Structures are given as structure tokens and as C-alpha cells.
Amino acid sequence: MNHRMNTPLVVYRVGRQQDADNLFSDRKTGKVADLKCFVVKTQTDAKAESTPVIYIVKKTIGVAKTADVRISDEVLLFGRKYLVIDSNPRRYWRELLVTCEVKGSEHA
Image (tube, rainbow, N blue to C red; front, side, top):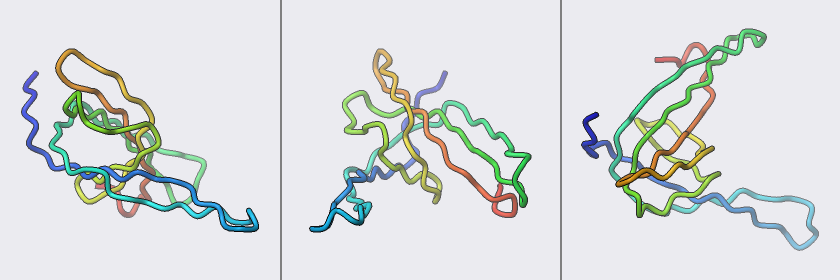
């Protein structure tokens, strides 16, 4: 497998901030890092019960093993935001499983 890390990736850390009355929990995002990565695998599944059709896109991407990426971070890849749902360390790199939902009309 050719592990050339030349695809740009932006990592955002998502934190929760409670207000004084503990009524609302705002999601605050902060940029953590600009990384280079490579896409290992892409899988697309359709949610058939929803109208219009919504696709679930899962990607496995590789980043440097020392990259500061955690589960529940958001990553921006190819102009689309993905949620990191798993992180698996390899020998020289780290494998991230990311996912997002896409409407049928926006599916590429």
C-alpha cells in the first residue's frame, strides 16, 4: 500500500460549554491542527427508510502516529466535515475511522 501523506486534513476539537443556568450546552469548535493524510478506504451505505435518501459515508484515513486527534473530533476532508469514531494505532501511522451523513442530492 502506498502511504503518501499528501491530502490536506484539518482537525477541530469540539467541546461543550455550559451556561450559568445549565440550560444550554453549546458546541464550541476550535481548530487543533492542519495535517497531511491518505485515504485508505471509502464505504457508502444508504439509509433506505428515509426520504429523501441519506447516505452514510465512512472513510478510513491514515495520519501520522503523533497526530493530536481524538475520538469525537471533527475533521475537514475534501470540503466535508466528518466525525472521528475510532482510532487504531499502526506501526508508523494511525488509522482513523470517520463518518458523515450526506443527502442524496449532495452525494458525489
